[in-house]
Amino acid sequence: MKQETKPVCIIPARKNSKRIKNKNLLNFGGKPLIAHSITEALKSKIFSRVVVTTDSKQIAKIAIKYGAEVPFIRSKKLSNDTAGIKAVTCDCIKRLKSQNVKYHFIIYATNPLLKTIYLKKAFIKLKKLNYNLLIGVKKFETNPIKAITINKNDLNFKYKKILLKNSQTFNNFYYDDGSFTILETKSYLRRKNFIAKKSTYFLHGENDSLDLNTKEDLVKLRKIFNSRN
Image 1 (cartoon, helix red, strand yellow):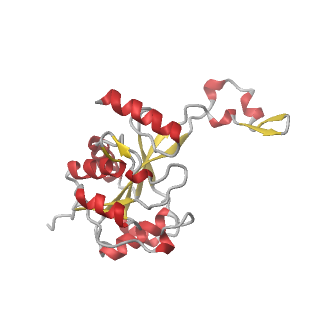
Image 2 (cartoon, one colour):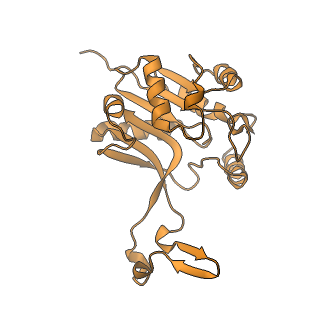
Image 3 (cartoon, one colour):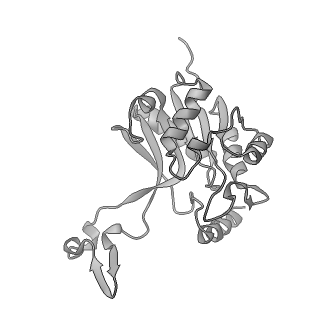
């Protein structure tokens, strides 16, 4: 029986981040932020290749230094604010000619709490279920059913009928935590949407994952990271 090729890991990392300038190269724990994702991916030993797709020669240089491949520089068309992750990863898969590799991982460059064990457990789950997509998620700290909108001086309780019920009856809500995604390659390339009908999840604990978007996130990340180390 022919042995299945190991998955390919894709790490998207473009320049010109807006809220935190050059956040992929931000010094975090003594090395560039993106280096944490690369290091954990390589440490897992579950990938045949760890590839960074970027439009930045500086990011490319750092990625190669920490052991990733950067076989091409991403086009400007796929490097603006409107470029979706599906278009970026499909482009990468086609450039790598890895369409026949059964699974690809997308690991994000701005979640330095990522651990090898999470990747391994998630991969085992996806294969066991034989699903087409797995996304790393976290539970909302505050249930969105309690959402309020504000119009001048007026409050509007978005789901006020539901709020009258006992809060213990509320469904839990979860969100994509910007950590990683595992995809079954052929179905991913074939469908138009990012999400598959057979999609599952890997649930992270509160301090297991945090995607860096704001300065407040950075403060929290450093606190968690330092307590771990």
